[in-house]
Image (cartoon, rainbow, N blue to C red):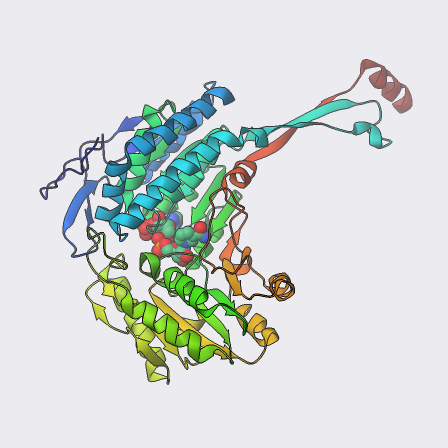
Length: 496
Ligand code: NAP
């Protein structure tokens, strides 16, 4: 598995993968009806299965059966350690799949593979989260005399629904913790980027994960719907947009829901900030992965005293970016995931411009490519300001005070935020008042270390990923209580 195989427009297994879906421990090699295309030009790059509700049912039932087979923690940990090593060994193959079927550049794809290996290594190392405790029954009248403890138990079959923008590492962020905690996982990757998830599953099986502990079902929203509504699924771990999240929450029934959603992320730049450093970080945070990143910088609130200087620097940085093919190592900004997505961003920017906004650079589309765009004077109710753009567009807004910046930043759901200031007291005061999953001081919203608790408030998410936090979320305490025979006798006497 070292090279990305050429695809000749037929329903063959692509990229040297063992199959186009993994159901009940078996790779599906026939009947691969779902074409996957390159966002660059829409050319076909491979085929996967179009799994229906019957396949989903088979995958969930087999996963539930697999849970009855012993797979002790030490073996789970060793399998994940081995998987991390194999991901490093197969880095070229995995990066090739990511940038061929997805929208990342080759450099961005390589970085994602390194992070995936790290996520799996961290998953293996998170076994200490599964420790239980002796319970202090003695601390209450009704508990006194009883003894017991709790251990952390797996939830059961976890449904993992993932988006297109980090097609490997976001799967690893669900599968690694779920398996470590002792669950079985059925993954439904984004229709646009299924091969990356299939490749990770192939690596996990090679690393020793028992067949049927992991399944990958391919297809669109209908396949996802069949999975999240399946009665055999105990928990849904979803990463994606708020509209899909609302549907899943309404349809899944009484299951544990973990949700990593979108962010309309703000950055505050104070009057004393290092403008070169702030502008450089904002340009990278707004336009990396063509803005298709839940941590993208979308809104910049700049103190009025430095607004012009910051805007000039951000605009110059955006103009210097090279928009081009994903395979060119010099490319900074590749395509969006589809021409339709680029056209949506074009429409949102067009509406803002029609409402009086000014574009300092960009505001231009070539097929699936949208050029890095810097806006000012955006109407306060424009989509580019109030909704998650998920494209390479940033709006810079002058603010008269820190209080105004904080209020504006908190006006929309954010995954994370950034604040640039040289004054520690100001940074801490602003951080205290921002409502987001993380505040990055002297950095932008676009900072994620895979071990940190990760997630948003309000419409940005429910629960936290970040490996050990996901292990905790994907397990529950189960208590054992020992009632001494002497207590029984006294209870019997009391009730007589
Ligand atoms: P999406 O449209 O919500 O899709 C996410 C996943 O849900 C895909 O696999 C999709 O399948 C599936 N799906 C669609 N309808 C479904 C249904 N009824 N039941 C179950 N599953 C269903 O999101 P996206 O466009 O792929 O990704 C972009 C969004 O993800 C953005 O909002 C971004 O901010 C968010 N995101 C969040 C994080 C985070 O960690 N917080 C990270 C990355 C991205 P199809 O693809 O086949 O339609």
